[in-house]
Length: 458
Image (cartoon, rainbow, N blue to C red; front, side, top):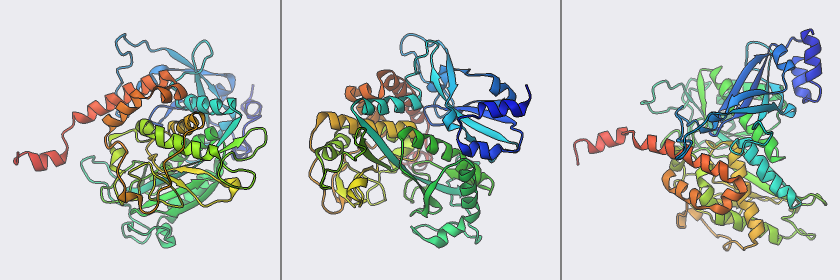
């Protein structure tokens, strides 16, 4: 069978943007990818002709036990670990271009199953699907809108060297404290142009790009929609933004706190919930007022986010972002139109009423970050408790109630049976194993600060 005929057959049912990208061209390669726990794309690149002949492929389930450093979690606990093959099946709706490659390449996100056809419980995309299905079983349709903050920084090939802002178009380093400056955005014009071009080729719509408060820090807003689709987009966006930056001799970093005296990078998550039967937002009543469900959702965030912080802030660096008066929350207060609180209610019409979780870092896995945030709200809807009184004033003047180290956050995560039941007990077990392995590895590293201040002084 000739390649054009194969290409036409398997592209049926895929998004129009993918068809448009390769129209009149010979498709060379397909990247079969899946997100691991950190959010790294794992998988295989296969020739288009071979991909068209296969309905699935195999990868070992050990990819979900791999740490961010490339090591392995003590996966078995006390019983040893057998590396089993998973069955990875393509989700055709995720087919999209890989426009930075030298040939004509498409990407397809795959879902992971065991040999019995059951979803792998610790695959991040499956975790999010599980949470969304719990909502739908109650007659609710969750809607989310993530905001992505990141830095464009100078190339850094020496881990011992501090990260520095990138050189702008003017030949000067990117300036700090220029939030919403169009001039600052223009400094990164060539990189931003490629981000737009790559996004258009992939069929993604950007709601806006702004300069944030940090030197070289940008924010991309995405349109609201289905949680799995939006997580797919963030997963894809991280890759395309990195590729756009590399074209211009700089790095894009999604570290929560890449530069010590600059603000951190968040993935703010906006949530609203629709009634499946009526299509109406359950956070707004018939006359446009706040509903009980609105308050229950906020209470769920307040009650359960401390246990979910280990998912929203997955690395030791993540906790450097929670700094008083530095554009990141330090507590779980809620308020309307107040960016100092961890839970914010933006100005909106009753139909668009939503709750914004400002705690998630941009370093979290988008599937897991959105799943954990929705899980907390779901528990709130079930428990039907009321939140604390709305906070008035500057929440940075309030008490801190967010874990400040990964170890403490993992302790809270491990103790939360309610959260485990929503996210999946097996996922919770594997996640804790991997993150504790990373944390123990970090504790074995002696930092420059320790050598500078303790070597001769204690």
